[in-house]
Length: 337
Image 1 (cartoon, one colour):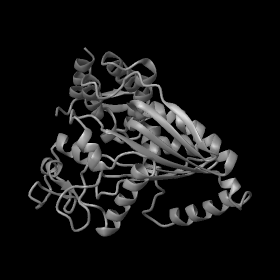
Image 2 (cartoon, helix red, strand yellow):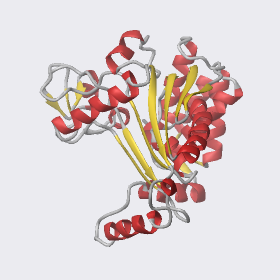
Image 3 (tube, rainbow, N blue to C red):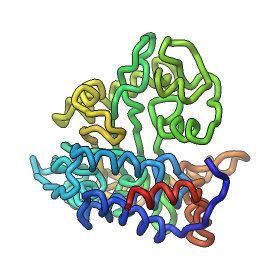
């Protein structure tokens, strides 16, 4: 890829992505929701979930796999249990609608859960976690994908990279948001390394013959390893159950069986949990108590709170813009037609 880049502000990236999606079958509501996620990823330095994903979005629209005119519907299954049917569309619009209802339910009951079903998820989880922590809620979310990770001791990919995210609100400050894959490395980061011609660190994955390799293209044809061996593998299994069996959606291997391999995201689900911290026993002290822990972490040299790097990138992007490769811009304009 060429090294030539053009600085773009997040609003410009959002407009570029929305125009491309609209030209390929998305209505305004869906195109704008996805574009907000893409622009946020580029803004925060999470390029593996930004413009790089746009060709996959376009491919799944052109193949007819994804409904670009989806109208998500929220259903209250019980007092604290919600389900959002994404109408076979991309997840961002369903999440924007669903997290609003989930937040309202959590503040009403103290704790609420939501299953997002019949959607195509292609982004990082911190985005929707922020939608909840900005409402003053503690939040968790997880989702599966298609097989990319070996179960501990296994030889064939079975689990998705199966990220698990957690958010803690900090009134008056940026929330603490953890978003990490169950694999040693997120698949999007491997894709980015392959695109840019970078070798991977040792211990990330294996090739199609099960042999360790640092070649990202070989890992994409083979499998990733779970972080921490059986510990990460167990977390990946937990995610499969929460985002699959519990909410009536598919496991990663089932998602692969019904996917058309057009390069876009498969149909699947997401599990979300929201907690109102003021309703769980320490109405006055939960924030002060948490800040004590954060202070102890930050006091040690070399540490940083989860999400801090994203917030630094965010501030820089809003001030100076984001460097986007000219080749990538040209490709997106070609897709836009």
